[in-house]
Length: 194
Image (cartoon, rainbow, N blue to C red; front, top):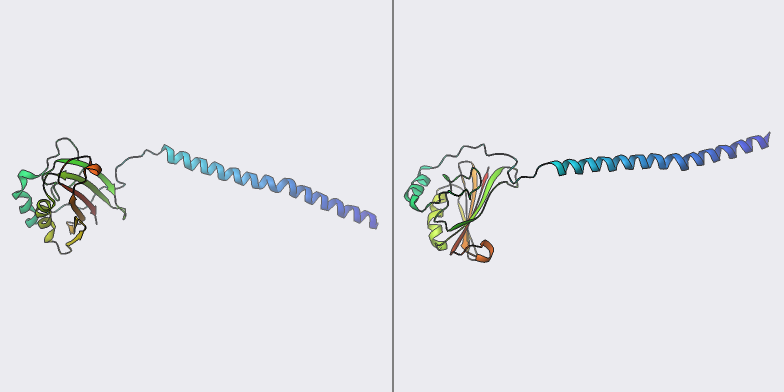
């Protein structure tokens, strides 16, 4: 009788070990293949999604131009850039922050800012000096309550919030190797909905 229990116990241990050796790898391989299938599906979905340079959202805040800003724009209307060759990003707010005395637009794009809000990034080159460019842009923003001006090396950065949009304008000497356009001054404008 003892032999019988001993043989049954050994047989039971062998069956348990054999089933563990065969069944557990099947279960683990199955879950690994499911993970691989899920990963492949996710990659395929990401690859099939069309890539655009357009922002994820569009601006919703209406642009209201302060009276003193509009006077400055009207006074300098002969020098303001008219986008006849569609160089500016779609819906760029030229009525709020126009481009002054443009020699060539080096970059302009609609984008989504760090905060997820829509905005625009535009850069251009002018034959005007940095001081002449600042004489136009400084008064546009100067009357805003949160206006700030910061000089870094040869560049000047102007910041303010106008009509629900955060505006940052950097005026610096032109680096023609960077912009591919010959000129004296370079202006970079970043506008983002607040």
